[in-house]
Image 1: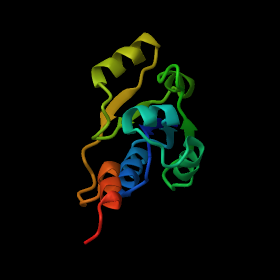
Image 2: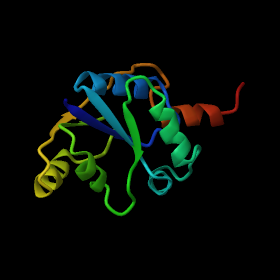
Image 3: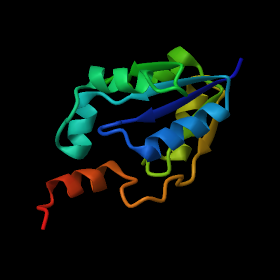
Length: 140
């Protein structure tokens, strides 16, 4: 059985997330998704809309997802060690450096293939930041 692992903040789940997770699931028999800690979301986005456990529950409820976990604050690679996936799937907007990730995997004895997904959603609101911006814009 092959296992794929995907990561995300999932601040507001939108069609781009769904397409990403569907494609990630197509790569393996089992899809494990790691949801970012609130502290990580605050560092990168400044605010948390839904707390980490609620975001994890939403992701766990999605059809392509076999298991949803919350990542670690101290060592973001620790969850990869624990699951030991065959494939790590990165989204098109994820800032993870593939070279650094490959180095960390090798250093920890994890033999996982890294797959970077292309942009899958073309709608106007395919990014959480665009959705938040639209919500905050005054309507005319």
